[in-house]
Amino acid sequence: MADAVPVAKRTGAHCIAIVELAKWLEGQGVEEVSDPNFGGTVEFDWGYVSLVPAWHTNTLPGSEESPFSAEHGIAIGPAAGLLIKIGETTVYHAGDTALFGDMELIARRSDVDVALLPIGGHYTMDRRDAVVAAEFVGAATVIPMHYDTFPAIEADPGAFKEEVESKTSSKVVVLSPGESHSL
Amino acid sequence: MADAVPVAKRTGAHCIAIVELAKWLEGQGVEEVSDPNFGGTVEFDWGYVSLVPAWHTNTLPGSEESPFSAEHGIAIGPAAGLLIKIGETTVYHAGDTALFGDMELIARRSDVDVALLPIGGHYTMDRRDAVVAAEFVGAATVIPMHYDTFPAIEADPGAFKEEVESKTSSKVVVLSPGESHSL
Amino acid sequence: MADAVPVAKRTGAHCIAIVELAKWLEGQGVEEVSDPNFGGTVEFDWGYVSLVPAWHTNTLPGSEESPFSAEHGIAIGPAAGLLIKIGETTVYHAGDTALFGDMELIARRSDVDVALLPIGGHYTMDRRDAVVAAEFVGAATVIPMHYDTFPAIEADPGAFKEEVESKTSSKVVVLSPGESHSL
Image (tube, rainbow over all chains, first blue to last red; front, top):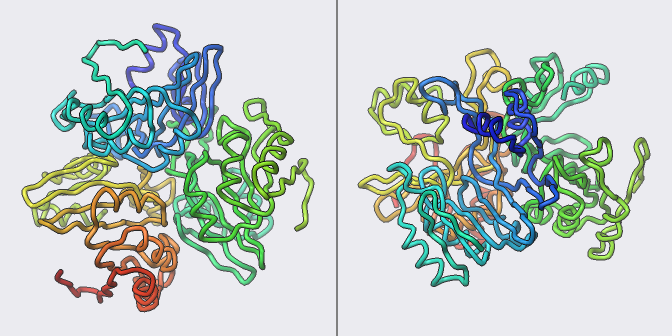
């Protein structure tokens, strides 16, 4: 979140965040900000972005040595996932989250083409719970994320791919840092 | 919430709120306060009030220009819905919330006669998700709320009524500001 | 939580808590701390501990007269339950929580041998909702907790035992303060 402010200012990007965070971004001088809450949708000429539930804490890091301490950070409450419609394609970015049953409801309400699911464990679900998430979501394409960037969240994306593809009709695309994938 | 304090003081109303908010109300000098958490019930001679889950943030507004900023407001965590039993009638006031699957569980645990459901979108579910909520709850009467008071939450209650009544056996009662409805 | 710091220091216990709380414990001088978020697992040679969702607020008490006031305490966001594997035995400590449907998912992902369920009401589900929780979890052994320590959470553990044992194949073990039970 600390990086979001300079990126938004440099690029002029429109930021969408849950209301408490959106208002903080405005206070930091970000100019284009939308402030939904869970269940809300922000529409654009290219599609829309909706905020959906996630099971994760949501804390604005403090400037101290221990940014996520309850004392130094600013806790906002529950975190959000994102449902992003771009043209004809619906992307479910689960955010940082544990597995939860309403992933099925999210996918029932919006046909998900691409699901980005965390597999790293520790701060999110691990790759085994993420297989169940992939079953719940039923996306054509699943992209694992939030793993291997530091030791606590090491994961085996190949094993995840194998298990998802053996249990569902989803195809798993494992990306290297910086790599892109076209649908 | 800022209005709750003078209203409670003027009327002597008994306030029920999640514990962090209840303790804040007491600190503001409100005299009759109950402080449950999710799943808790406060009983009265006329019935009871239970706190049920909702997917929404819950922030005490700050006194600054940007009351709901993470920095200026005081975030409490997840928000609550209410289940209110008055005599023989059970009212589910969903609060501000996104659609979630446990609305079905709430209605399974307590036969809901009247459901107040937000339909405005942006800060809550929109009228399309609220149709699914109405299906989950199965109340005899559904009253849409939390819409049309400012542009971000404009909604079409007539379309909501038509869709709910075509898909469920619930009857939708659309109220104008200040209007009342007797069961 | 105030007690956790001296206990951890005296015993050298390894503390596991959601990240904001874990970082606070570290700041208080606790030496062995793990900091998962929902869905995360911390492994030991004797088993593991996972953080699972719960419906409850999570506030670090303030030092003032009203420790859980939104102003005096430090709210972190949603609270967690625990899944604890010790050798061959899986314990689900539901934490303080309302009843929620994903208790079924938690139990589907990990066969639960022992479930500790709150029954006191007011700050958690009451004994009637806890019967449904016991149905969702399907543990061989259910131990009621979080009741009778102060008037607001008085409950009848015998009635809970009778109802769970008539509706499920779980055996309910009611413990007195200080009493232990071996599996």
